[in-house]
Amino acid sequence: MSKPLLKILFVCMGNICRSPTAEGVFRQKLIDHDLDQYVLVDSAGTHNYHPGSPPDERSQAHAVRRGYDLSALRARAVHDGDFESFDLLLTMDWDNRALLEERCPKSLQHKIRGFAEFLQKTPATVIPDPYYEGAEGFEQVLDLVEEASDGLLQLVRREVERAKLSPQNR
Image (cartoon, rainbow, N blue to C red):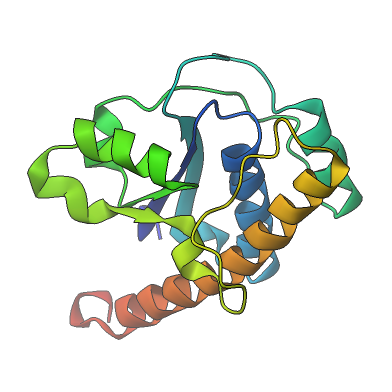
């Protein structure tokens, strides 16, 4: 496919811990399941605190121990065009979601969801910010992001199957 079926933007506050972790983990899971050609993945922050910065060193260190390389990612802020460009804007917590909903045109609000909605077993409603936490905070984020990514993969698989069955693709 020349054009991705889905465009997914992961969003946290500063785009240096949770959202780049989600981007890196989900991108690797797409590759591992041979679905990367169907999905464009990116991340951004609700605040422009760290433009152009790589992910937090602690996020990178914990991620690399699990086989995820975040080193090429760079922080950016959400811009107004993202609401139109992306099919899903997945927020890490309620504050991020509220900030996006304030900025998003009413007709596109349906694109904003919480990433924790895709958790399969863990009864959490947010992916907590590990910035002021120790190593256990970053490990918890990875645990939740991996689990939510597996749930999100189910949605991607359904969309890919639907596209393959579509008369226009026959």
